[in-house]
Amino acid sequence: MAYERITTDPDVMGGLPRIRNLRIPVATVIAMLADGMSADEIVTELPDLTQDDIHEALLYAAPAMPAFLTVGSQTRR
Image (cartoon, rainbow, N blue to C red; front, side):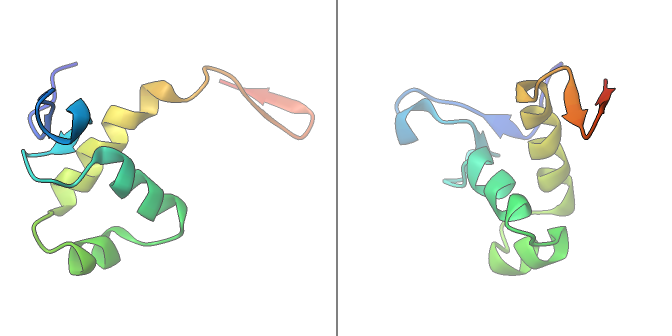
């Protein structure tokens, strides 16, 4: 999948994937979501971001999740 909003450059921030050449790593956005922040709260906190940036950060990070998640006694795909 091609990402329009995710950029990497080995000479900037150690090559971390970032949002639109900003110094905002994808991992920062994902961590904010994991901490319970809403997309609106993130955009308020980081006004250079848009809702589309947050959505693409999630799409970018999703393949890092395991293919199978076990919830209770059920296995989900």
